[in-house]
Length: 186
Image 1 (cartoon, rainbow, N blue to C red):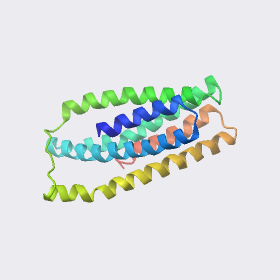
Image 2: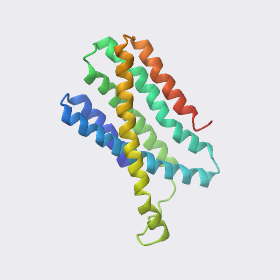
Image 3: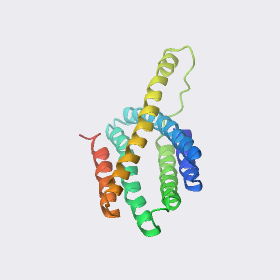
């Protein structure tokens, strides 16, 4: 989980540092891979924590987390673009990278206080066979993440092309993020 999380933070910083299309495309692919790893491994860890502490709410909190990230990004990016101009994506991405860094540090500190003792999975065991089959699930998350990122890029472009101001753009993302936060509880 930590590796995937730090890949995502690094990639956001990389996106802030470049405007080169190939680099941005590679970065988005790495973000999908890192996000898939973090989400998959975090799901496993959250389940273990919830089982150990009889706290099913931990799962809801974990699955609501990406929605909170959407809300934060959705509020920060349109405001940054309005303040610094439409062509200031590097500044908007720097804001996103800063938010991601702060949230990653908070998550890692909180995770360290809740973590179960590590139980290494040995190849050839029942757990090892289950983990090897889970690679397909991880691949599915990767594909989902890539599709989601591409789809949402087109959605915000559509909102912007309609002449919608930063407030409407922020509201658009806030509604999507709030729905994502509510969905685990519903």
